[in-house]
Length: 276
Image (cartoon, rainbow, N blue to C red; front, side):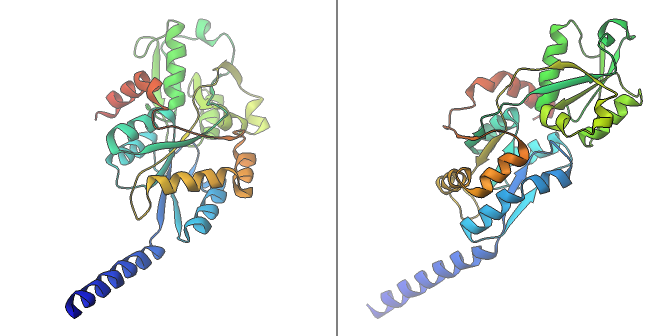
């Protein structure tokens, strides 16, 4: 009996020590590169500070050079414990890496196509040069759908070029006449300077589509249930309110695991482009 008692004490001590060790292990939050790294880190500081206080652990805000790189990391399921990403990439992460959708914003994503003149589709020589941030960014895919509805198709009428850069750079490229169209999300358009906006025109403004999605998986000592409780608490916190003021995404909305099923079409197109 003394041997069994000693074994149990050692087991409990080891388990406690292991749990204690995790207190210094950072939780990794991956944010899709919808803006420059500087803007991403600044606009998610309230989330970082809240999660650090909630879990009593350090939190790393992480991103990637492109949507394609970010999606591939999410789909491998080893780089991030929680992710905040566009709807098409969220569904792939759920399918391929067992992330669970937990929360979104009530303000949907709106896509903006900018040009230098309203008659660019008619008067500019084809193929038109179209600038976006990545072939699998949600804004690119939504803009592509609209351009196809106008009878304009890739390779024949349009040449897409992609820049790993902030949206103000895309607008600058457009103003310099290096491209004919520039694609970006509405929040990124609103961040443009008045000077840049005075030199461009909105050719297309999409209706609202599903917004960015928070997802998590069981890893690094935190269960999906615990992540859900943390995000629910964040949505009701002063930090959450400040985050909404910064992002202008209205409010938070909790999700069910099947919330992304309607996005299969755009997700399949994304997967094909990723070559996975």
